[in-house]
Length: 288
Image 1 (tube, one colour):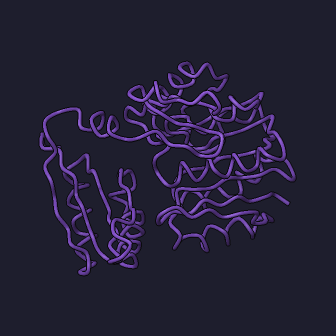
Image 2 (cartoon, one colour):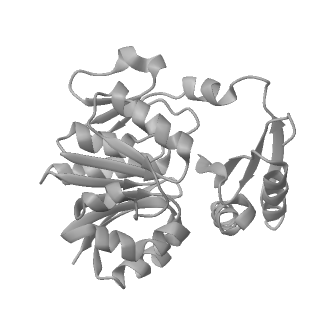
Image 3 (cartoon, one colour):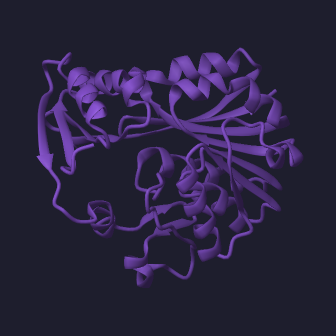
């Protein structure tokens, strides 16, 4: 990778932006890409993709994918020679999702006394609560908690650990998370300690880790990842859940809902609820 850090921005109509985002996810060279998609101007149907390549090959692949969508206006901005991730996070406001209030160190003084306050430091991990998928999962979990509690919770693709930490802070006796990214696992365990939450995170691909198997079956499984691995893991997530258990799935675009739902409904899941935030979808499913 060159020393120059860049941000690639694509703006255009929602249909083109969502199609381009789906193409980025389907492209093998960008499967680990950090990006976001959101509505920038509702009145003029302007949606925006922000992508942050970490390798020259990844940057080239992004540019090649976006070039297939002529309705998008693509620009590239050079990021300042600084800890731009930390700088960007320092400007993010806290997030409220039902009973949960997610904040960073810079907003510690804003945490209300009446909420479950989760201090989440992102570092190099995904999941500060600002992304539509993370806040969708928290909102879905908050609604479920109005009716019941979940003694055993698994978080697949934990990122910062915010979802498993939220479970531990609301009474789950077992809250375990996994991630294929070792730095994310370290950050998640640090966040658990910051929040005095009895949640544990392990480095694993899939659901075969001994610690994951030891605590199965689970009452609730979070999986805030991407549509292709959500589909690939549908059988494993079913087997990890007890009958009647719930899965909160996110990381998928609205345009990918049908594909993900088809995979889970073929395994006997029933759709309980869907949440849309920007271009993203969160699905709540029950194992029959």
